Amino acid sequence: MSNADNTLFLRLAGPMQSWGTSSRFQLRRTDAYPSKSGVLGMLLCAMGVHREDSRQKLEWLTPLVMGVRVDRSGSLDWDYHTAGAKIGIWQADRKKLKRTASTGEYETQLSRRQYLYDASFLVALHGLADTVSACAGALDSPIWPVFLGRKCCVPGEPVFVGTGSFDTMTDALSSVPWRPRIDAIDRKAWSATRTLDTFIEHPQGIPTPGDARLVHDVPRAFGFHSHGSRWVVAGQVTVPVAEATHKLVAEPFARRVDYTSPQWKAARASRLKLDHDLCVFCKSAAEHVHHVSYQNVGHETDSDLRSLCETCHDACTMLQYGHRMKTHTVDPSDPAQRPEILQQIKRLLAERRFGRRRELLKAARTASKSFFDIEPGVTPGKVQ
Image 1: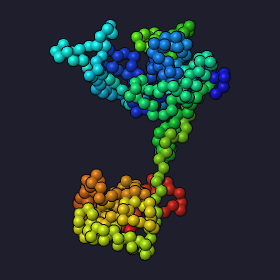
Image 2: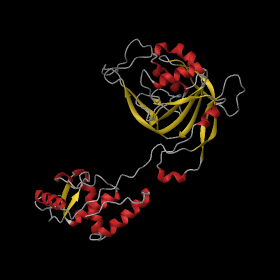
Image 3: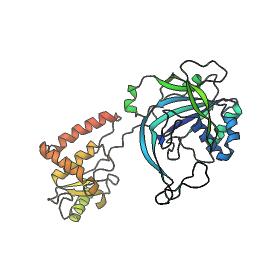
Image 4: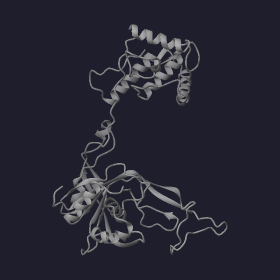
């Protein structure tokens, strides 16, 4: 970080966010993008500033000009919320706790609260270099945890992204590439650039554009909330597309099993004896021994294997390949997996596909190999 950096970047992404600027009584809404009061509140948490001490700090932070880039808009939905159960909530004058008139017990406040699900925003704060430097240091090593609007909204990624020096907010929001969440398989679906929506605070002292929106989210103090207003202009920026944030990597195929080795024959006989030569799933005569784990190939123990009849073995193996399981596979002795195995058996019987397992699995391997673009020379595990 340079001493001349005038812009701070934050990544606000997580399962849930809430940026309320127009809440009324028990109906608590959220805006579609982060509010300035919410972002500055995060900075105060990182600095360890108490609510009663927030006024002086906010006088130092509110001059920062804020811009938001919508990398993933997410979706809006509602949740049911209670507050004050068994402990009460204060009356407006804060002289005593509210009690219900009929029972005299502490009152519980019921509310509907709106949340923004699965969204991601890039936030830029532009201002004096000293202020940016202090905020960056606090976010990099926060005193208190930071949240995305409410304490139940935990960040899914590191909030502090970095700093930089830019002449305009548009330049700042255009400088950070957009990164999709998809894996490398679908990367070709994205172009070299992407156009994203922005919401940029209009600086004071400059004529306001006709399409600007007046937002009352500039905090003067927390605790007894007091907010000022600012103008926000909606726009767009075109940014380069970088590599995906997460890559779907194919799990290595199961190690090859030598079904002619003395070791395998001994392991197979041991498991059949343990199961009294019965299928662990349907209790018919067992004809096969199925791997539930390939971790100990060449040194299998009874816990790695299960005895199965031919039909149950076909069903379990088809599920294994259908779910692209490799090291750990379908366990027919697990009650939680029983419904899916039964469904697969019904499907095999209805379609009269039993007895064609080798042919079907060969096709499944070919499709799986093509899907994950496996490097030449990688061979799927041999099927018993």
